[in-house]
Amino acid sequence: MEGAKDASSREGHHCGGCHSEENGKFLNPTPMLNELESGPWPSFVSGFKELAERTKKPMLRGVLDQLEYSYNTKMGYWKGGLVTVDGYGAGIITRYSMIKDKFPEAAEFHTMRIQPAPGLHYNTAMMRELCDIWEKYGSGIITLHGQTGDIMLQGIEQDKVQQCFDELNQSGWDLGGAGAGMRTAVSCIGQGRCENACYDNLKLHLKTLKHFVGVLHRPEWNYKLKFKFSGCPNDCTNAIMRSDLAVIGTWRDAIQVDRDEVNAWVEKKGMDVLVNQVINLCPTKAISLKDGEMHIETRDCVRCMHCLNAMPKALSPGKERGISLLMGGKNTLKVGVNMGSLIIPFMKMEDDEDIEAFIEQIEEIIDWWEDAGLDHERIGETIERVGLKQFLDGVGIEADINMVTRPRDNPYFKAPY
Amino acid sequence: MSIDVNGVKYDVDENGYLVNLEDWNEDVAVKLAEGEEIEMAEAHWDLVKFLRNYYEEYQIAPAVKVLTKAIASEKGMDKKEASEFLYGLFPKGPALQACKIAGLPKPTGCV
Image (cartoon, rainbow over all chains, first blue to last red; front, top):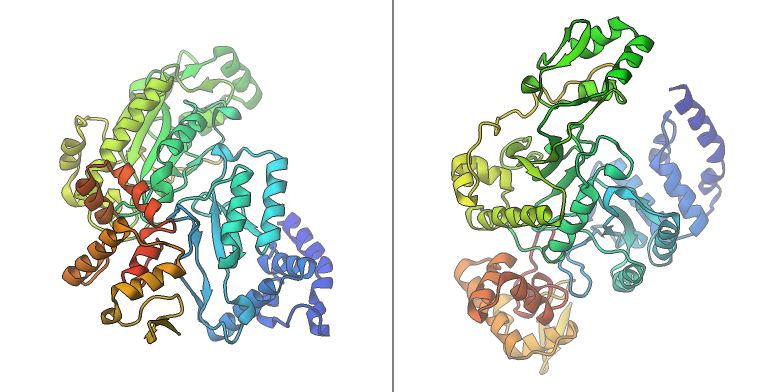
Protein backbone atom coordinates (compact mmCIF):
# COMPACT_ATOMS: atom_id res chain seq x y z
CA MET A 1 0.00 0.00 0.00
CA GLU A 2 2.90 2.31 0.85
CA GLY A 3 4.25 1.77 -2.62
CA ALA A 4 0.92 2.54 -4.18
CA LYS A 5 0.71 5.82 -2.27
CA ASP A 6 4.18 6.76 -3.42
CA ALA A 7 3.18 6.07 -6.95
CA SER A 8 0.10 8.21 -6.60
CA SER A 9 1.99 11.21 -5.32
CA ARG A 10 4.40 10.87 -8.19
CA GLU A 11 1.44 10.56 -10.50
CA GLY A 12 0.00 13.73 -8.98
CA HIS A 13 3.15 15.69 -9.66
CA HIS A 14 3.50 14.31 -13.06
CA CYS A 15 -0.05 15.22 -13.90
CA GLY A 16 0.52 18.87 -13.20
CA GLY A 17 1.05 19.11 -16.93
CA CYS A 18 -2.17 17.28 -17.67
CA HIS A 19 -4.32 19.83 -15.95
CA SER A 20 -3.42 22.34 -18.58
CA GLU A 21 -6.87 21.92 -20.10
CA GLU A 22 -8.17 24.46 -17.58
CA ASN A 23 -5.93 27.00 -19.30
CA GLY A 24 -7.58 26.45 -22.65
CA LYS A 25 -5.07 23.90 -23.94
CA PHE A 26 -5.61 20.76 -26.02
CA LEU A 27 -7.99 18.91 -23.67
CA ASN A 28 -11.33 20.22 -22.44
CA PRO A 29 -12.11 20.38 -18.71
CA THR A 30 -13.22 17.01 -17.29
CA PRO A 31 -13.88 17.59 -13.57
CA MET A 32 -15.71 14.27 -13.04
CA LEU A 33 -12.95 12.23 -14.66
CA ASN A 34 -10.29 14.12 -12.71
CA GLU A 35 -11.78 12.65 -9.54
CA LEU A 36 -10.64 9.24 -10.74
CA GLU A 37 -7.06 10.45 -10.56
CA SER A 38 -7.25 11.35 -6.88
CA GLY A 39 -7.23 7.79 -5.51
CA PRO A 40 -4.12 5.88 -4.44
CA TRP A 41 -4.05 3.75 -7.59
CA PRO A 42 -2.84 4.43 -11.10
CA SER A 43 -5.67 5.90 -13.13
CA PHE A 44 -6.62 5.25 -16.74
CA VAL A 45 -7.64 8.90 -16.94
CA SER A 46 -4.05 10.03 -16.33
CA GLY A 47 -2.80 7.68 -19.02
CA PHE A 48 -5.48 8.81 -21.43
CA LYS A 49 -4.68 12.48 -20.86
CA GLU A 50 -0.96 11.95 -21.15
CA LEU A 51 -1.38 10.14 -24.46
CA ALA A 52 -3.77 12.81 -25.74
CA GLU A 53 -1.39 15.64 -24.81
CA ARG A 54 1.52 13.86 -26.45
CA THR A 55 -0.17 12.78 -29.67
CA LYS A 56 -2.75 15.58 -29.98
CA LYS A 57 -5.25 13.12 -31.41
CA PRO A 58 -8.74 14.72 -31.47
CA MET A 59 -10.31 11.26 -31.08
CA LEU A 60 -8.84 10.94 -27.59
CA ARG A 61 -10.14 14.36 -26.62
CA GLY A 62 -13.58 13.48 -27.95
CA VAL A 63 -13.70 10.21 -26.03
CA LEU A 64 -12.73 11.92 -22.79
CA ASP A 65 -15.42 14.55 -23.38
CA GLN A 66 -18.05 11.91 -24.06
CA LEU A 67 -17.01 9.92 -21.01
CA GLU A 68 -17.26 13.03 -18.85
CA TYR A 69 -20.75 13.57 -20.24
CA SER A 70 -21.57 9.91 -19.52
CA TYR A 71 -20.54 10.31 -15.89
CA ASN A 72 -22.80 13.33 -15.58
CA THR A 73 -25.83 11.75 -17.17
CA LYS A 74 -25.12 8.21 -15.86
CA MET A 75 -25.61 6.76 -19.32
CA GLY A 76 -23.36 4.96 -21.79
CA TYR A 77 -23.36 6.25 -25.35
CA TRP A 78 -21.58 3.57 -27.40
CA LYS A 79 -23.44 1.40 -29.86
CA GLY A 80 -22.27 -1.54 -31.93
CA GLY A 81 -22.30 -2.18 -35.67
CA LEU A 82 -20.42 -4.19 -38.22
CA VAL A 83 -16.89 -3.53 -39.40
CA THR A 84 -14.61 -6.22 -40.80
CA VAL A 85 -11.56 -6.58 -42.98
CA ASP A 86 -11.43 -8.53 -46.24
CA GLY A 87 -12.04 -12.23 -45.81
CA TYR A 88 -12.80 -11.92 -42.11
CA GLY A 89 -16.16 -12.01 -40.37
CA ALA A 90 -14.93 -11.09 -36.92
CA GLY A 91 -12.18 -9.43 -34.97
CA ILE A 92 -13.18 -5.78 -34.97
CA ILE A 93 -15.45 -4.63 -32.16
CA THR A 94 -17.36 -1.59 -33.31
CA ARG A 95 -18.08 1.42 -31.16
CA TYR A 96 -20.07 4.25 -32.70
CA SER A 97 -21.06 7.22 -30.60
CA MET A 98 -24.82 7.62 -30.22
CA ILE A 99 -24.33 11.33 -29.68
CA LYS A 100 -21.81 12.13 -32.39
CA ASP A 101 -23.48 15.48 -33.08
CA LYS A 102 -22.51 16.50 -29.58
CA PHE A 103 -19.06 14.90 -29.70
CA PRO A 104 -18.04 14.62 -33.36
CA GLU A 105 -14.48 13.78 -32.39
CA ALA A 106 -15.72 10.60 -30.69
CA ALA A 107 -17.92 9.48 -33.60
CA GLU A 108 -16.02 6.21 -34.05
CA PHE A 109 -13.83 4.36 -31.58
CA HIS A 110 -13.57 0.76 -32.80
CA THR A 111 -11.46 -1.92 -31.15
CA MET A 112 -9.18 -4.32 -33.00
CA ARG A 113 -8.61 -7.61 -31.21
CA ILE A 114 -5.10 -8.90 -31.90
CA GLN A 115 -4.02 -12.41 -30.98
CA PRO A 116 -1.13 -12.66 -28.58
CA ALA A 117 1.59 -15.27 -28.88
CA PRO A 118 0.94 -18.45 -26.83
CA GLY A 119 2.01 -17.85 -23.25
CA LEU A 120 2.38 -14.14 -24.03
CA HIS A 121 5.97 -14.55 -25.12
CA TYR A 122 6.85 -11.50 -27.18
CA ASN A 123 10.07 -9.84 -28.10
CA THR A 124 10.41 -6.10 -27.74
CA ALA A 125 10.96 -5.55 -31.46
CA MET A 126 7.50 -6.96 -32.21
CA MET A 127 5.91 -4.89 -29.47
CA ARG A 128 7.54 -1.70 -30.71
CA GLU A 129 6.42 -2.38 -34.24
CA LEU A 130 2.88 -3.03 -33.02
CA CYS A 131 2.86 0.25 -31.09
CA ASP A 132 4.21 2.22 -34.03
CA ILE A 133 1.68 0.86 -36.49
CA TRP A 134 -1.12 1.38 -34.01
CA GLU A 135 -0.20 4.98 -33.30
CA LYS A 136 -0.03 5.65 -37.04
CA TYR A 137 -3.59 4.48 -37.76
CA GLY A 138 -5.37 4.42 -34.40
CA SER A 139 -5.58 6.18 -31.08
CA GLY A 140 -2.50 4.57 -29.57
CA ILE A 141 -4.44 3.04 -26.69
CA ILE A 142 -3.59 -0.60 -26.03
CA THR A 143 -4.96 -2.97 -23.40
CA LEU A 144 -2.60 -5.80 -22.54
CA HIS A 145 -4.50 -8.05 -22.30
CA GLY A 146 -8.28 -7.86 -22.40
CA GLN A 147 -10.50 -10.43 -20.73
CA THR A 148 -10.72 -12.28 -24.05
CA GLY A 149 -6.99 -12.88 -23.97
CA ASP A 150 -6.41 -10.57 -26.92
CA ILE A 151 -4.29 -7.49 -27.25
CA MET A 152 -6.98 -4.82 -27.49
CA LEU A 153 -6.14 -1.95 -29.78
CA GLN A 154 -8.79 0.57 -28.84
CA GLY A 155 -9.85 3.50 -30.96
CA ILE A 156 -9.75 3.46 -34.75
CA GLU A 157 -11.99 4.80 -37.49
CA GLN A 158 -13.64 2.48 -39.98
CA ASP A 159 -11.81 4.01 -42.94
CA LYS A 160 -8.43 3.12 -41.52
CA VAL A 161 -9.20 -0.41 -40.34
CA GLN A 162 -8.23 -2.28 -43.51
CA GLN A 163 -4.94 -0.43 -43.97
CA CYS A 164 -4.03 -0.84 -40.33
CA PHE A 165 -4.81 -4.55 -40.45
CA ASP A 166 -2.77 -5.05 -43.63
CA GLU A 167 0.27 -3.49 -42.05
CA LEU A 168 -0.12 -5.42 -38.79
CA ASN A 169 -0.63 -8.62 -40.74
CA GLN A 170 2.56 -7.98 -42.72
CA SER A 171 4.39 -7.78 -39.40
CA GLY A 172 3.07 -11.16 -38.33
CA TRP A 173 0.02 -10.22 -36.26
CA ASP A 174 -3.48 -11.49 -36.79
CA LEU A 175 -6.94 -10.53 -35.60
CA GLY A 176 -8.48 -12.36 -32.65
CA GLY A 177 -11.83 -14.07 -32.41
CA ALA A 178 -15.25 -12.53 -31.88
CA GLY A 179 -18.84 -13.56 -32.43
CA ALA A 180 -20.22 -17.09 -32.49
CA GLY A 181 -17.03 -18.93 -33.31
CA MET A 182 -13.73 -20.08 -31.91
CA ARG A 183 -12.19 -17.40 -29.72
CA THR A 184 -8.61 -16.44 -29.08
CA ALA A 185 -7.07 -19.07 -26.84
CA VAL A 186 -5.05 -18.35 -23.73
CA SER A 187 -2.19 -20.28 -22.24
CA CYS A 188 -0.05 -19.91 -19.15
CA ILE A 189 3.72 -19.45 -19.48
CA GLY A 190 4.08 -23.23 -19.70
CA GLN A 191 7.25 -25.28 -19.93
CA GLY A 192 9.01 -22.21 -21.26
CA ARG A 193 9.37 -20.83 -17.75
CA CYS A 194 7.57 -23.09 -15.27
CA GLU A 195 8.71 -26.40 -13.80
CA ASN A 196 5.17 -27.48 -12.95
CA ALA A 197 3.92 -27.56 -16.54
CA CYS A 198 2.88 -31.14 -17.30
CA TYR A 199 2.71 -30.80 -21.08
CA ASP A 200 3.86 -28.40 -23.77
CA ASN A 201 0.80 -26.19 -23.63
CA LEU A 202 2.34 -23.56 -25.91
CA LYS A 203 2.75 -26.10 -28.68
CA LEU A 204 -0.74 -27.48 -28.19
CA HIS A 205 -2.12 -23.93 -28.18
CA LEU A 206 -0.37 -23.10 -31.45
CA LYS A 207 -1.42 -26.33 -33.19
CA THR A 208 -5.02 -25.97 -32.06
CA LEU A 209 -5.03 -22.32 -33.08
CA LYS A 210 -3.81 -23.18 -36.56
CA HIS A 211 -6.40 -25.90 -36.90
CA PHE A 212 -9.31 -23.68 -35.92
CA VAL A 213 -8.13 -20.45 -37.52
CA GLY A 214 -10.88 -20.51 -40.16
CA VAL A 215 -13.78 -20.56 -37.76
CA LEU A 216 -11.98 -18.07 -35.55
CA HIS A 217 -12.08 -15.48 -38.31
CA ARG A 218 -15.40 -16.56 -39.81
CA PRO A 219 -17.71 -17.45 -36.93
CA GLU A 220 -20.53 -19.83 -37.75
CA TRP A 221 -21.39 -21.82 -34.61
CA ASN A 222 -24.17 -21.55 -32.05
CA TYR A 223 -22.15 -19.27 -29.88
CA LYS A 224 -18.63 -18.61 -28.73
CA LEU A 225 -16.21 -21.37 -27.77
CA LYS A 226 -13.09 -20.71 -25.74
CA PHE A 227 -9.95 -22.72 -25.17
CA LYS A 228 -7.58 -22.16 -22.31
CA PHE A 229 -4.42 -24.17 -21.80
CA SER A 230 -3.03 -24.43 -18.29
CA GLY A 231 0.18 -26.34 -17.75
CA CYS A 232 -0.73 -27.76 -14.37
CA PRO A 233 -3.66 -27.86 -11.92
CA ASN A 234 -2.62 -24.48 -10.48
CA ASP A 235 -4.55 -23.34 -13.53
CA CYS A 236 -2.94 -19.93 -13.93
CA THR A 237 -5.17 -19.14 -16.91
CA ASN A 238 -8.27 -19.74 -14.78
CA ALA A 239 -9.36 -22.19 -17.47
CA ILE A 240 -11.80 -24.09 -15.30
CA MET A 241 -13.99 -21.04 -14.78
CA ARG A 242 -13.40 -19.02 -17.91
CA SER A 243 -13.30 -21.46 -20.79
CA ASP A 244 -15.62 -23.91 -22.49
CA LEU A 245 -12.70 -26.19 -23.18
CA ALA A 246 -10.27 -26.14 -20.27
CA VAL A 247 -7.12 -28.11 -21.02
CA ILE A 248 -5.25 -28.57 -17.76
CA GLY A 249 -2.00 -30.44 -17.30
CA THR A 250 -2.01 -33.31 -14.83
CA TRP A 251 -0.25 -36.59 -13.94
CA ARG A 252 -1.60 -39.99 -13.08
CA ASP A 253 1.15 -41.57 -11.01
CA ALA A 254 2.54 -40.42 -7.68
CA ILE A 255 3.95 -37.00 -6.86
CA GLN A 256 7.73 -37.15 -7.18
CA VAL A 257 9.41 -36.69 -3.83
CA ASP A 258 13.06 -35.69 -3.49
CA ARG A 259 13.91 -36.96 0.00
CA ASP A 260 17.03 -34.83 0.38
CA GLU A 261 15.19 -31.67 -0.58
CA VAL A 262 12.33 -32.56 1.80
CA ASN A 263 14.83 -32.91 4.64
CA ALA A 264 16.54 -29.67 3.69
CA TRP A 265 13.16 -27.95 3.62
CA VAL A 266 12.19 -29.32 7.05
CA GLU A 267 15.57 -28.34 8.44
CA LYS A 268 15.12 -24.79 7.22
CA LYS A 269 11.44 -24.24 8.05
CA GLY A 270 10.92 -26.68 10.91
CA MET A 271 8.68 -29.67 11.48
CA ASP A 272 5.88 -27.40 12.79
CA VAL A 273 5.58 -25.72 9.42
CA LEU A 274 5.50 -29.07 7.62
CA VAL A 275 2.69 -30.30 9.85
CA ASN A 276 0.71 -27.07 10.14
CA GLN A 277 1.05 -25.63 6.68
CA VAL A 278 1.46 -28.63 4.44
CA ILE A 279 0.07 -31.79 5.99
CA ASN A 280 -2.88 -30.19 7.82
CA LEU A 281 -3.82 -28.11 4.81
CA CYS A 282 -4.04 -31.02 2.40
CA PRO A 283 -7.73 -30.84 1.43
CA THR A 284 -8.10 -34.61 1.10
CA LYS A 285 -5.79 -35.61 3.95
CA ALA A 286 -3.55 -37.52 1.59
CA ILE A 287 -0.35 -36.64 3.45
CA SER A 288 0.74 -38.15 6.72
CA LEU A 289 3.93 -38.69 8.70
CA LYS A 290 5.35 -42.20 8.55
CA ASP A 291 8.35 -42.89 10.78
CA GLY A 292 8.97 -39.14 10.90
CA GLU A 293 8.98 -38.89 7.08
CA MET A 294 6.43 -37.29 4.81
CA HIS A 295 4.21 -39.85 3.09
CA ILE A 296 1.73 -39.07 0.29
CA GLU A 297 -1.10 -41.52 -0.38
CA THR A 298 -1.52 -41.13 -4.14
CA ARG A 299 -4.98 -42.67 -4.13
CA ASP A 300 -6.27 -39.82 -1.98
CA CYS A 301 -4.50 -37.03 -3.84
CA VAL A 302 -6.74 -34.74 -5.92
CA ARG A 303 -3.83 -32.79 -7.45
CA CYS A 304 -4.77 -29.56 -5.69
CA MET A 305 -1.11 -28.49 -5.97
CA HIS A 306 -0.92 -27.13 -2.44
CA CYS A 307 2.00 -29.25 -1.24
CA LEU A 308 3.84 -28.81 -4.54
CA ASN A 309 3.49 -25.06 -4.27
CA ALA A 310 4.57 -25.03 -0.64
CA MET A 311 7.63 -27.23 -1.25
CA PRO A 312 8.70 -26.44 -4.82
CA LYS A 313 12.08 -28.18 -4.89
CA ALA A 314 11.11 -31.15 -2.75
CA LEU A 315 7.93 -32.13 -4.58
CA SER A 316 7.14 -32.14 -8.27
CA PRO A 317 4.39 -33.54 -10.52
CA GLY A 318 4.53 -37.26 -11.32
CA LYS A 319 6.34 -38.75 -14.29
CA GLU A 320 3.33 -39.95 -16.24
CA ARG A 321 2.05 -36.61 -17.43
CA GLY A 322 -0.68 -35.46 -19.75
CA ILE A 323 -3.82 -33.35 -19.83
CA SER A 324 -7.33 -33.47 -18.54
CA LEU A 325 -10.14 -31.78 -20.42
CA LEU A 326 -12.87 -29.98 -18.53
CA MET A 327 -15.84 -28.53 -20.32
CA GLY A 328 -18.53 -25.98 -19.72
CA GLY A 329 -16.87 -23.23 -17.69
CA LYS A 330 -18.61 -19.90 -18.34
CA ASN A 331 -20.04 -16.80 -16.80
CA THR A 332 -23.72 -15.99 -16.35
CA LEU A 333 -25.95 -16.43 -19.39
CA LYS A 334 -29.07 -18.58 -19.67
CA VAL A 335 -28.08 -20.44 -16.55
CA GLY A 336 -25.74 -19.05 -13.92
CA VAL A 337 -21.98 -19.21 -13.63
CA ASN A 338 -20.58 -22.69 -14.24
CA MET A 339 -17.27 -24.30 -13.56
CA GLY A 340 -16.03 -26.87 -16.02
CA SER A 341 -16.90 -30.54 -15.54
CA LEU A 342 -14.28 -33.19 -16.06
CA ILE A 343 -14.91 -34.84 -19.41
CA ILE A 344 -11.60 -36.49 -20.27
CA PRO A 345 -9.74 -37.40 -17.07
CA PHE A 346 -6.41 -38.15 -18.69
CA MET A 347 -4.90 -38.00 -22.13
CA LYS A 348 -1.24 -38.25 -23.07
CA MET A 349 0.13 -35.13 -24.75
CA GLU A 350 3.68 -35.90 -25.77
CA ASP A 351 3.99 -36.03 -29.55
CA ASP A 352 2.19 -34.83 -32.67
CA GLU A 353 0.02 -37.93 -32.75
CA ASP A 354 -1.34 -37.10 -29.32
CA ILE A 355 -2.11 -33.59 -30.51
CA GLU A 356 -3.89 -34.93 -33.59
CA ALA A 357 -5.97 -37.29 -31.48
CA PHE A 358 -6.87 -34.39 -29.20
CA ILE A 359 -7.95 -32.15 -32.07
CA GLU A 360 -9.98 -35.00 -33.56
CA GLN A 361 -11.80 -35.44 -30.26
CA ILE A 362 -12.50 -31.71 -30.07
CA GLU A 363 -13.86 -31.73 -33.64
CA GLU A 364 -16.23 -34.51 -32.63
CA ILE A 365 -17.39 -32.52 -29.62
CA ILE A 366 -17.96 -29.40 -31.72
CA ASP A 367 -19.88 -31.35 -34.37
CA TRP A 368 -22.18 -32.67 -31.68
CA TRP A 369 -22.67 -29.22 -30.21
CA GLU A 370 -23.41 -27.67 -33.61
CA ASP A 371 -26.31 -30.08 -34.05
CA ALA A 372 -27.55 -30.44 -30.47
CA GLY A 373 -27.01 -26.88 -29.30
CA LEU A 374 -29.48 -24.04 -29.60
CA ASP A 375 -28.64 -20.62 -30.96
CA HIS A 376 -26.75 -18.54 -28.39
CA GLU A 377 -26.13 -21.51 -26.13
CA ARG A 378 -22.70 -22.25 -24.69
CA ILE A 379 -21.60 -25.86 -24.85
CA GLY A 380 -21.81 -26.24 -21.06
CA GLU A 381 -25.44 -25.17 -21.19
CA THR A 382 -26.19 -27.63 -23.96
CA ILE A 383 -24.67 -30.44 -21.90
CA GLU A 384 -26.64 -29.34 -18.86
CA ARG A 385 -29.87 -29.17 -20.86
CA VAL A 386 -29.63 -32.58 -22.53
CA GLY A 387 -27.75 -34.33 -19.75
CA LEU A 388 -24.15 -35.50 -19.46
CA LYS A 389 -25.02 -39.04 -20.58
CA GLN A 390 -26.53 -37.84 -23.84
CA PHE A 391 -23.44 -35.77 -24.47
CA LEU A 392 -21.06 -38.65 -23.76
CA ASP A 393 -23.08 -40.94 -26.05
CA GLY A 394 -23.12 -38.26 -28.73
CA VAL A 395 -19.36 -37.79 -28.82
CA GLY A 396 -18.42 -41.39 -28.09
CA ILE A 397 -16.72 -40.97 -24.74
CA GLU A 398 -17.15 -43.71 -22.11
CA ALA A 399 -18.54 -42.65 -18.76
CA ASP A 400 -15.81 -42.79 -16.14
CA ILE A 401 -15.76 -42.68 -12.37
CA ASN A 402 -13.28 -39.82 -12.62
CA MET A 403 -15.90 -37.54 -14.15
CA VAL A 404 -16.84 -36.23 -10.76
CA THR A 405 -18.89 -33.09 -10.32
CA ARG A 406 -16.15 -31.38 -8.38
CA PRO A 407 -12.70 -32.19 -9.67
CA ARG A 408 -11.19 -30.27 -6.81
CA ASP A 409 -12.53 -30.57 -3.32
CA ASN A 410 -12.80 -26.82 -2.95
CA PRO A 411 -11.75 -24.46 -5.73
CA TYR A 412 -11.59 -21.49 -3.36
CA PHE A 413 -8.99 -23.14 -1.20
CA LYS A 414 -6.20 -20.67 -0.60
CA ALA A 415 -3.47 -21.36 1.89
CA PRO A 416 -1.36 -18.66 3.55
CA TYR A 417 1.99 -19.83 2.21
CA MET B 1 -30.05 9.18 -46.66
CA SER B 2 -31.09 7.65 -49.93
CA ILE B 3 -29.75 6.00 -53.07
CA ASP B 4 -30.74 6.80 -56.63
CA VAL B 5 -31.62 3.91 -58.97
CA ASN B 6 -32.98 4.68 -62.46
CA GLY B 7 -34.21 8.04 -61.25
CA VAL B 8 -36.07 6.63 -58.25
CA LYS B 9 -34.92 7.49 -54.73
CA TYR B 10 -34.81 4.74 -52.09
CA ASP B 11 -34.33 5.42 -48.38
CA VAL B 12 -31.33 3.77 -46.73
CA ASP B 13 -30.11 3.99 -43.14
CA GLU B 14 -26.80 5.52 -42.07
CA ASN B 15 -24.99 2.24 -42.80
CA GLY B 16 -26.47 1.95 -46.25
CA TYR B 17 -29.10 -0.70 -45.49
CA LEU B 18 -32.43 -0.43 -47.29
CA VAL B 19 -35.08 1.02 -44.96
CA ASN B 20 -38.13 -0.53 -46.64
CA LEU B 21 -37.90 -4.23 -47.44
CA GLU B 22 -40.44 -3.99 -50.25
CA ASP B 23 -38.31 -1.38 -52.07
CA TRP B 24 -35.94 -4.15 -53.13
CA ASN B 25 -35.54 -5.19 -56.75
CA GLU B 26 -32.63 -6.46 -58.80
CA ASP B 27 -31.56 -3.00 -59.94
CA VAL B 28 -31.46 -1.82 -56.34
CA ALA B 29 -29.41 -4.90 -55.45
CA VAL B 30 -26.89 -4.11 -58.18
CA LYS B 31 -26.63 -0.54 -56.90
CA LEU B 32 -26.13 -1.71 -53.30
CA ALA B 33 -23.52 -4.22 -54.49
CA GLU B 34 -21.66 -1.43 -56.30
CA GLY B 35 -21.32 0.35 -52.98
CA GLU B 36 -19.66 -2.79 -51.61
CA GLU B 37 -17.45 -3.12 -54.69
CA ILE B 38 -19.04 -6.44 -55.59
CA GLU B 39 -19.94 -7.44 -59.12
CA MET B 40 -23.05 -9.59 -58.98
CA ALA B 41 -22.53 -12.99 -60.62
CA GLU B 42 -24.87 -15.95 -60.65
CA ALA B 43 -23.51 -17.32 -57.37
CA HIS B 44 -24.13 -13.97 -55.71
CA TRP B 45 -27.71 -13.90 -56.95
CA ASP B 46 -28.33 -17.45 -55.68
CA LEU B 47 -27.24 -16.45 -52.23
CA VAL B 48 -29.14 -13.18 -52.18
CA LYS B 49 -32.32 -14.97 -53.24
CA PHE B 50 -31.75 -17.66 -50.62
CA LEU B 51 -31.50 -14.93 -47.99
CA ARG B 52 -34.68 -13.22 -49.18
CA ASN B 53 -36.65 -16.47 -49.25
CA TYR B 54 -35.41 -17.39 -45.81
CA TYR B 55 -36.33 -13.97 -44.49
CA GLU B 56 -39.79 -14.16 -46.00
CA GLU B 57 -40.40 -17.49 -44.31
CA TYR B 58 -38.87 -16.85 -40.88
CA GLN B 59 -38.83 -13.01 -40.62
CA ILE B 60 -35.19 -13.16 -39.61
CA ALA B 61 -31.90 -13.41 -41.47
CA PRO B 62 -30.40 -16.91 -41.19
CA ALA B 63 -27.51 -17.55 -38.82
CA VAL B 64 -24.21 -17.96 -40.63
CA LYS B 65 -24.17 -21.64 -39.70
CA VAL B 66 -27.52 -22.17 -41.47
CA LEU B 67 -26.13 -20.40 -44.51
CA THR B 68 -22.92 -22.45 -44.65
CA LYS B 69 -24.84 -25.68 -44.14
CA ALA B 70 -27.22 -24.83 -46.97
CA ILE B 71 -24.34 -24.05 -49.30
CA ALA B 72 -22.42 -27.15 -48.21
CA SER B 73 -25.34 -29.46 -48.96
CA GLU B 74 -26.21 -27.75 -52.23
CA LYS B 75 -22.69 -27.62 -53.64
CA GLY B 76 -21.48 -30.85 -52.07
CA MET B 77 -18.73 -29.09 -50.11
CA ASP B 78 -17.63 -29.62 -46.55
CA LYS B 79 -18.35 -26.83 -44.10
CA LYS B 80 -14.86 -25.35 -44.28
CA GLU B 81 -15.01 -25.11 -48.07
CA ALA B 82 -18.50 -23.65 -47.88
CA SER B 83 -17.32 -20.97 -45.47
CA GLU B 84 -14.42 -20.05 -47.70
CA PHE B 85 -16.73 -20.01 -50.73
CA LEU B 86 -19.07 -17.66 -48.88
CA TYR B 87 -16.31 -15.25 -47.96
CA GLY B 88 -14.98 -15.49 -51.50
CA LEU B 89 -18.27 -14.10 -52.75
CA PHE B 90 -18.68 -11.55 -49.97
CA PRO B 91 -15.23 -10.72 -48.58
CA LYS B 92 -16.49 -8.59 -45.71
CA GLY B 93 -18.77 -11.35 -44.54
CA PRO B 94 -22.23 -12.60 -45.47
CA ALA B 95 -23.87 -10.76 -42.56
CA LEU B 96 -22.43 -7.44 -43.54
CA GLN B 97 -22.58 -7.53 -47.33
CA ALA B 98 -24.99 -10.25 -48.48
CA CYS B 99 -27.76 -9.06 -46.16
CA LYS B 100 -27.28 -5.49 -47.32
CA ILE B 101 -27.48 -6.42 -50.98
CA ALA B 102 -30.51 -8.62 -50.29
CA GLY B 103 -32.23 -5.60 -48.77
CA LEU B 104 -32.56 -7.21 -45.33
CA PRO B 105 -32.25 -5.17 -42.16
CA LYS B 106 -28.83 -4.85 -40.58
CA PRO B 107 -28.05 -7.96 -38.52
CA THR B 108 -27.62 -7.32 -34.82
CA GLY B 109 -25.16 -8.91 -32.46
CA CYS B 110 -21.42 -8.94 -32.33
CA VAL B 111 -20.74 -10.82 -35.56
